[in-house]
Image 1 (cartoon, rainbow, N blue to C red):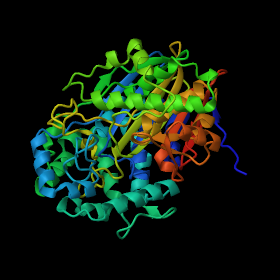
Image 2 (spheres, rainbow, N blue to C red; image 1 turned 30 degrees about the vertical axis):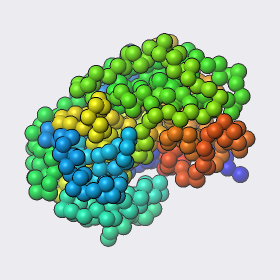
Image 3 (cartoon, helix red, strand yellow; image 1 turned 180 degrees about the vertical axis):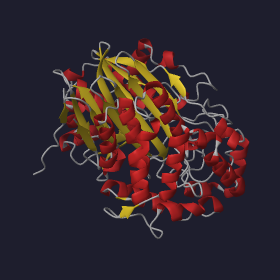
Length: 542
């Protein structure tokens, strides 16, 4: 029989993430006297080395920090190149043809329309600046010290974890058929003789070690104004890219106030757009007006699914770069609006107008320290290995976040110069009557807001500990009435949902359901943590 995974109970602090070596790097920092932000940064930086298909130095970052008294949000996502226009993207895709766009991974119609690979979807990487900005505001140990484990693994190598190896293999398979000088470095740096490393096989990336050392020593200045920036500019200029040194030099993170809704005596916090966290808040606000406890298990699931659909419909219609478009965040989160949306739910599966975002490659982590500081942090290059454009001599791939733009000229998220696109990666945080409960997240592209809804419901409605909440069988809504469910979901519930018009497929592949972590404050002191059992997740404490 299968035995349930038990939660971690830790008296001083905890780290939870999707890769054990990265969790160990964060725990080592806590034990050296670092705080939760130091631990989060050590974990995040190490993840770029030990889980490169899902995140890399060339990606973006978002974080929520509880400093012991209040929440702070950091949007460390990058903007599109100043030279990138809708007309340029249309001309490039017209030259390639619709079939070529499909082959590159771009979705036609209402969803993503920018090609998925190559230079067109590349936006400025925000993660290195995000690391520096978090450290400057909250860090306690020297910035360069937080890179030690990541640089060591990149230089000396490490055995690849099984879950990472599986994602790696899918990413390498997606590289087949990509031709062009911009892709030349990918196979040298990110494959072993043209294939993905196997589980347990050692892999090293000395180029990434040198890049991380330069970021550490310069406080990320080298990445945006120094040798690394020059290398990115040169590679783009030589291979038809649009990203320039000026784009990199103009980059800046943004400190933001997290936004929240009430849910059964708790407050659920997300970052405001350009992220999709508002989709989770919209769904939870719809559900907060429903007495789920009085419903059958089948009815509860039906309501959750329909609420998530409504949340996504609004997010896809309105989320954009708030610096470049008016995003009605306050109006969307108004309780009266939630009541109107709630009235649209019937006993049958709905068919909302929404996009079809792709499943993404992302890592999530959370940390907590003895002083009460807690961090919820997520970073990503989006699809596995992002754009598949690797900067020569520097060992990292650039993200493809521009895939989040639209080509509809009337949409607030239309592709254009110096804009942040719709972003899938979202950190979450839970409080109760203003007191911290803890950080949480569920990675995985379109799965993330619905993963947040399911984790919060399992915690608040069902009273489960973080590990049990994460282990609860999940469902994944893609589009229309289609629904994927895990094999462990009660067959009677599946049959009941089908009778309501949900078109259900039982999916054996776990990655579609996302990977999550959570750390809650324990009532008697210390912390209780959970980490994803569907992949190589680990939670460590002391």
